[in-house]
Length: 235
Ligand SMILES: Nc1ncnc2c1ncn2[C@@H]1O[C@H](COP(=O)(O)OP(=O)(O)O)[C@@H](O)[C@H]1O
Ligand SMILES: [Mg+2]
Image (tube, rainbow, N blue to C red; front, top):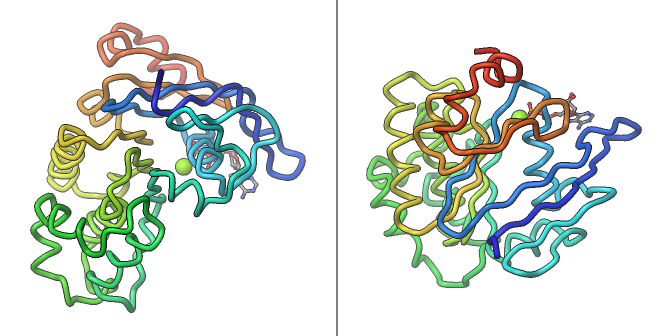
């Protein structure tokens, strides 16, 4: 049984039928990536899993339990962390205060227990622990956003476009860190627009277009499908 199972999800914004029957699964320990053009429905899929937008149809099962219809904080408490697009670091709070926010919603009420572990992934954040969020570089803000998801020690982390707008060297180091987070036991459902990053990190990928899954397979399988890449990813 998969850790996360999404079945035939239908999500609307008003009258707009945005997710038109999305199904996917993420096994324990996997990195699974949703990839596809802007507007394909990737973020909406994560928001629907997290309960931020409420799907009109379909099922979301996490660790064997039905979670569709639960409030976001209840879903977070079951062990799913969400790292939103555009980072949303609080500018007037310090790095430490931002990280403590991550502890609020988490699965395990373990004080500051997750902090040391997080600093092992992001030593740079330890150096800047008293710095206000607004004084961090874009790369540091992205690291803080991921770290904030990680402090609660989630079983599954949803990470939305972490490399967007970052310089190539930062993209490389973030890719390495996400791989490390995965190897140390956190399951990851990633949204990523950069095909090379997605191929390097993922065990499996789902290509989305216009609210549907158009392809599902391993990185090797996707590499063998130039037509899919061209049609849905514009490569
Ligand atoms: N809050 C919203 N209200 C109305 N339409 C939205 C909203 N958010 C996203 N959409 C629309 O839903 C579709 C999917 O968007 P989204 O899930 O953000 O795509 P992606 O993350 O793949 O770029 C797009 O057509 C987008 O314009
Ligand atoms: Mg998006």
